[in-house]
Image (cartoon, rainbow, N blue to C red; front, side, top):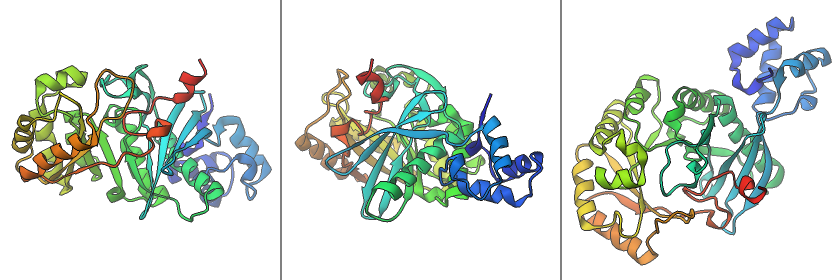
Length: 345
């Protein structure tokens, strides 16, 4: 079975080159080409015999853009096809400071959150570190070939389809590859989790200091269990304890993600509990207007969103309402679901 070249780091590429009886500097050339997302035919400075050797055992591209959709606000959603035919989505967002890419960590998701479309079909499989890196590489290539503005992806948010900590080893390797292979440091990386406490505590010991985002959505276990099945395994207080541990180890402010749902989680009682839970460590509450995913849960309107924001701020908490991007192309928070599958069944 063929393997992915992009899954190999520099040392592994060097071992491959030696196995093929090629000179060691070929590993640097191969590293350069794979991190540009080049096809075998584009690797013009490699001997044809070596290219033939590679083609027999490896895929040159791990993820190729099958379709892309552009929002009125400039956001671009990519539908990417993997070598086994699986489909994933990533979202490219343009800001004044550069490009941010929202990447997927799994094909599908098994968390089953009621407000998220990504898990409607369950989990198909995990992505390898190289496949995740290929999402960034594909976006960089698209920017270079199709967009007028200069630049490349400078920030990565692991908030697409999948629960990153359910694919722990590959996600940790991916974050490290971002730094070593694409010069995207961990301060430019955010990881969103619905609260797998044991894995959160493992992150600092694995050398991870990215921005940790806790997908909370309710400060009460009873409510959270009705919208997030994972709450049956992890209590809110345990999640906050793990978040505090991460903050203590890394010094990085924690982001609390909070999708506002009409009649569910926007009362004064919710604010009081949030204040109790976040006492003792630096955090920011990212209030998210719930996007339409076809679920029965409904979001709040703009007036209600900012009314809740005022309550949160009055309690002395740091908070903002997240600007929603890509809604018209189903590329906003909670909407990613390999859209091509739905339209072509």
